[in-house]
Length: 290
Image 1 (cartoon, helix red, strand yellow):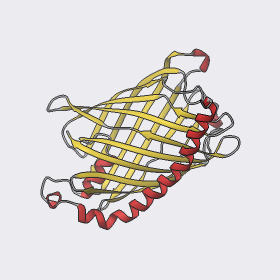
Image 2 (cartoon, one colour):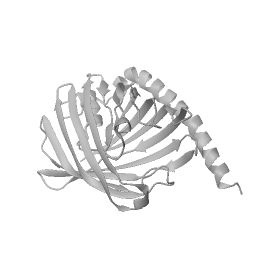
Image 3 (cartoon, helix red, strand yellow):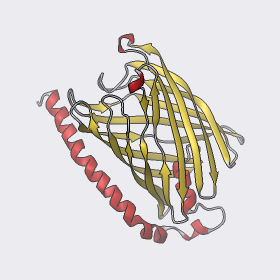
């Protein structure tokens, strides 16, 4: 039997070899999908009441859309840690809508991360699991809001990849959707309340502004940085503010709707150990409408 270190090293090596290939394939499919998607779109998609490609693009981005959505986001970080190495992660964050009644919906958004963190002390495994819940009006309006709790559980597979603490706090989002524009902001505050007190407290603010413009063809461009502030860190390491853009394409193949996007973000003043810049690619499946 192979020792645990050899197994972990093998898995990590396969992940490091696979993610760049996945990024290249996604980019190729994204660029090639423009003409094919128009041919694949069923005729009923252009009739009244059906989803256009522009609507699908906005639904892909909308945290309160009535679709069950399953996004897979691959992120490669460059210049990570003291040795400026490459790290990878996979995030799966499905959106699960539940109709409470004719006026209110409940949106559940679990978030699972698998990470390969480079050396020293290289680690591969799961990070802490997060789950958000939003109570939101069921009526379609230009302005849509949602509010609820967020929970973080100490489920990381190793000490370096998690906090060791149980955390919770409030979360809220506000979005505006009109014509080709989709504008929104999502935020939460996480604070620890139980767990291994020797690991230190969790006190983090997360802010995700978003601005996107979608074309009739389903192509869209967006600015979607994930901004964090760690209240337990010193000022030089508290802020994480990425700067960049994504481009994407929503399309249908038969009755199946999905989107692909790629983007790059720079970190002008990254905290110690954080990447200097990242490339990310996302594939989102839109399964059923509530």
